[in-house]
Amino acid sequence: MTQHKEIGWNFENSYARLPETFYENIEPTPVRSPELVVLNKSLAKTLGLNVEELQREKGIDILAGNQLPDGALPIAQAYAGHQFGHFTMLGDGRAVLLGEQITPSGDRFDIQLKGSGRTLFSRGGDGRAALGPMLREYIISEAMYALGIPTNRSLSVVITGDSVIRETDLPGAILTRVASSHLRIGTFEYTAKWGDVEKLRILADYAIKRHFPDIEDNEDRYLSMFQEVVERQAKLIAKWQLVGFIHGVMNTDNMTISGETIDYGPCAFMDVYDPATVFSSIDMQGRYAYQNQPGIGQWNLARFAETLLPLLHEKQDHAVKLAEEALSTYEKLYHKHWFAGMREKLGIQNKEEQDKTLVEDLLAIMEKHKADFTNTFRALTLDKPEETAMSGTTEFTQWYEQWQARLERQEESKTAAHQLMKKVNPAVIPRNHRVEEALEAAVENEDYSVMERLINVLSDPYAYSAEQEEYATLPEPSNRPYRTFCGT
Image 1 (tube, helix red, strand yellow):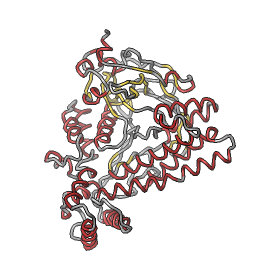
Image 2: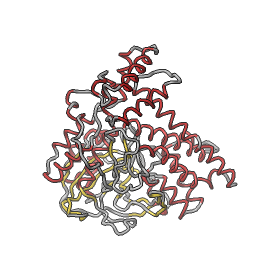
Image 3: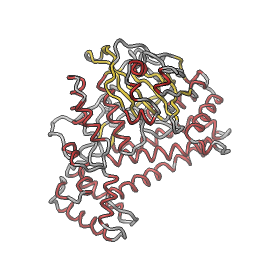
Image 4: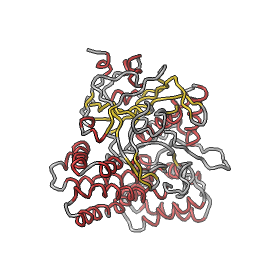
């Protein structure tokens, strides 16, 4: 048995056995002196990996791209995408897919090294990544997982011993990303633009086999696949909205077929409730603002539908009609998931017509009084309305009375309502100032303890533990809005 087998790598390479149209064969570029700084031990065990062996030299060499694990067939995937509404050729410019890990339970996950060097798709970039953005993706992706939101995950961060040049010299790093797959809407856009119908069919059949096996034998399986993706995206974006998550760069190449959140670039969580909130420094027009995310999801799905037309029906007019009918369900599906989530956030377990007004009125009062999104629902969950920014106002007092009356009209007790609320309203989120604090300690002082404490607190966001109290506090007031950057 080789050392790599002892680590637990168990690769298959189904994507790398598709036609070479879809990827470039390439190996990671070696780095000078790799050092493991963060390891997700629980995820490693789920993947069937030996944590102790993974932390030894050969394990770290694999996570750094200096060695390939047994069975790996490394590739950079090709894809295109609409970036801020404009179509362009893209692809993995600094990421290498090592292969697909088959877990002890039989699940399949892509193992990708991010920041592993130049590829055919680098477009002049250096193919590397800086430490701060890689740690940021680790923190946010794992927080999203703990919140119960479908997401890619992070296995490790390795510092490379090499510098990367951005505005200044920064420590280089490689993130090991784990995902159900890296199939994107942009993967289909690339194939529709530069492939042919047969290649498109191969890709669609592959996506169905991997993510939607229940529809594989359907006569209209391509339409069924589109309907499945519509449902998953509607549900995913509703979950984002319910916790105040702002993706920041909802380009079509950043939207997966699997329905997982991917590509944590300029993302952040909203503090003060303001539907127009934008964090990304490059989103000058607010295209991807919090309030626009549901609509952008539908816009992206329309681009996906356009790629599938040749597979939906031989007559284009009929194919367009089928696609439009399927896409038209998105808005209703999104509102169904979002509204069901909002009812739960208020402890409501049945339906009344006036629930919509109750929810809308609360959000309007929150916006008017610049109430913190997470902490408002946290206070309501704990039945401490006096801790909200709206406390003492006539409109909130009236709303609170209406809410209490609403809870009394359902069969479930108020205790049951608050128990439900605790399951859906996080006590903590990765507050922007806490994330920045952790990154600064790690990057500037090589102190990872701040990040470790933050990750530990975020690992069970619905615990409402005493330890989480400190992490629920708001940042100090600032005259400048918080801004994020596309460093990842």
